[in-house]
Image (cartoon, rainbow, N blue to C red; front, side, top):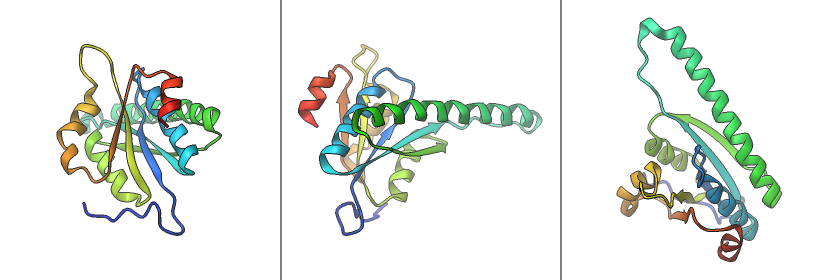
Length: 164
């Protein structure tokens, strides 16, 4: 992956990519991204990844129903996150739904948009660790194509306002 970032070239604007999941700390990433976008005059791309399940041909009808339900849930999660960002910063984020391995789908989303200049994730403050996506990204952070911003889940709105 060697796609040149074009975020600050004429005709482009910087965007941050935020992964939308069902964790409590996800709101911290959305909040940070929305505030950052306003501060730099950029945009936000919200990505929801549906993890693909093995589909047995015999159960294709059931798999299709499950897939449709997963897309409905993804759209509902993106609606909530987009509404939150719009309420915070009067921005309308781009929305992307992808299926597959989350880390691979994050990388493919970055590869597909030369204006994405940062990935924003939020880390859980719980004893179980920062969360599966943060853990997976951290393993490859040294070779990642863009900066990764990890927002601690314990930061308040005021804390984030001071940082973004």
